Length: 193
Image 1: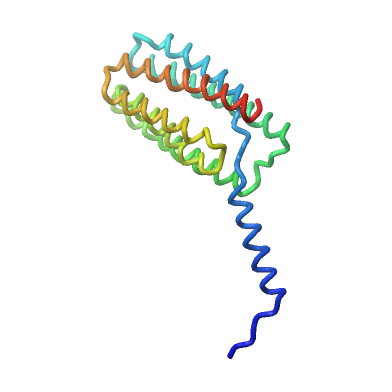
Image 2: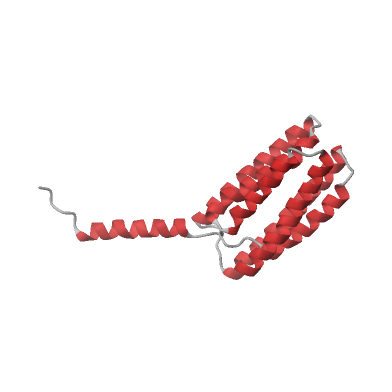
């Protein structure tokens, strides 16, 4: 017969297990609600401005929107996290950002490759699908509404595969515009600004 382990070893194992479980259970809650609404409004304006344009002129408008949205979203997220005392250095936040940015970086590389070959018609579907994927994957470390929003983006991405270019541009407006406004308002009401 083996001798039972001392009680302090059991306690340390239990404490380690509890701490790891709590870290996994944390959620990144600094998703900007009102910032998302503002991003949605600028995306709707971009969709209107981009309507009827093609090629580089169309792409320039949407890349400008992506840059503007990144600034708005980053600033809104930073301010919300600061008000709530949320750290960007904890393990849950790092996991959120890794799973959020991986599909976005893929989208940027794919955009460069498609533009190089003048294949603009595939971009709306790719952007909506990859942006949706970023929210589905990062939603595992965030509030429950985030993956739902991601699925909605992916559905629009699938639709963008099936419509002409002008329709795909409208779907970009519906996704990056309409979905951001709707889900931004939901997040602001349920989870704070």
